[in-house]
Image (tube, rainbow, N blue to C red; front, side, top):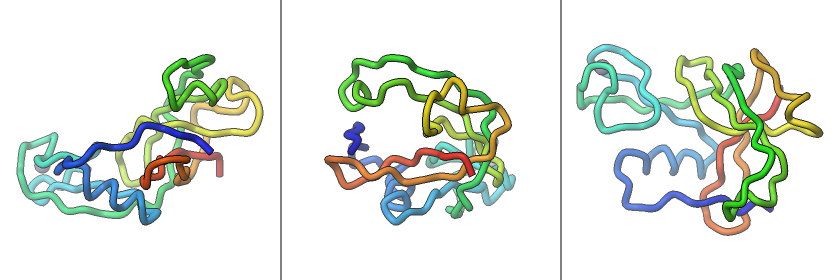
Length: 137
Ligand SMILES: [Zn+2]
């Protein structure tokens, strides 16, 4: 099983997000003043600065906006992965997330811009928080 770095708490802006991840939910925020979709989670709207935001649950489906393949990473928690795709995924609710797209075989061949993907919560060897990654639908 993978052994990725875990979030460190207290982390007031993202704690609710990570609690969602632990329950198999991908959460994001919308602004109560300007209705902007807000992600990554913050205490204020990144568009207008308003402090009132509402948490929502994403369906977890989106499209690969772009990606790159890391061929080798010596950082603990990543060195066992082999080649892996780092991608921006555009979620259907209107936010963009930096994540991994996990595929069988060669990610340079099997990940594509425009590919439809769905979130998966990858359990970790150590630590209670799974890591949200994406897989082709
Ligand atoms: Zn706003």
